[in-house]
Image (cartoon, rainbow, N blue to C red; front, side, top):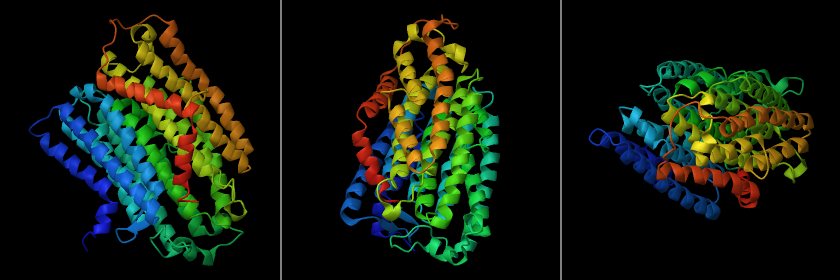
Length: 504
């Protein structure tokens, strides 16, 4: 069966990105210049975001719509994440332009990043189990190649192999979990536009209060699916691959994994939990499970980060800890009677935090991309004296690190405030307390980097930095967003409130 006009219209952002990706890859055979590929990607991003804005307006007029034989859904929630993912990846690719000289096939690198972004864009829209799995694989397989892309990173090939093996294992666990969900519900469909959710309707027959998650098949399916998705999101105890891959892969790939992949993964997790597994006999169980995982993930990520000497490994453990904070919001399922005020705090806090996290983490990784390329090392001591040699880089990195700690008036402070407030409203005050303690612990290693930049003399010789216009633009945009969204959070709150209505 071919695509209908409606299918093409609602899938237009992804179609545009695929077309431009093919243009980048094939044009790179004749014109391998990195700038051409990067600017084509920026054009593709602009086109896809414009199409997404039109879809947002269409949804406002017509409401959410299912398409592609009910395998995908177009609503404000999915469109919000499409724009967030595209913006984050575009900024990462733009700031990485100067470092692409280390790749012999520069156009292929950008083209594969674009194809991976298509998979990430599909995840928030996925409405059945097969589409979810295909979208995850489409997002992951290009990353395997990109992780092993660098000819200058000695561990790049090893990183690609590790990511391939562990990604295959996680995909197998996820697929096995989906098989149990299918067995319990009798349908591959996980979303619908009517009030009767097909998955829950199929499972209600066998739910039992005396069994965790209502039944043994759902229990096994949840454990396997959370395990498989936990690898993608770097949730403890499934985070083992993260530091090695971040360290060995090109820094650009680490940034994509840290920001875009995490946003798409949590978008999928949040939608499934709040629209499929929101039954009162199931929600308390997964809420407690995720709360425990959040506490462990935050704690291990922050504690291990303290002893790191390599900047990329430190950011890897930081990403693990940040996944724990996001899990706090996901776990904050407050099932108030009639879905009154309080019910929406969990999803809204997650969307707000992921947006703020994208701004502050892209800012941090942008500085790391530039410093690693210039110094040819990712050791933390290579940042010594950066405050004197490059006030812009040191200032942007300081703002992003303070935001990751949660210091006002940054977006990190507001994000953690909303996350922990949602936990308190969901009777998870103990989890909010653990989160606050972990934020204090993280201050040690984040502020230590700031101390190194401003209070130590340079250990690597070199004059003042020359930062290109495109890189400076990314640095100013991300640092500015980190501060502005913290000072004036209401516009973003209104936007995430509108988006989260699609799943609550």
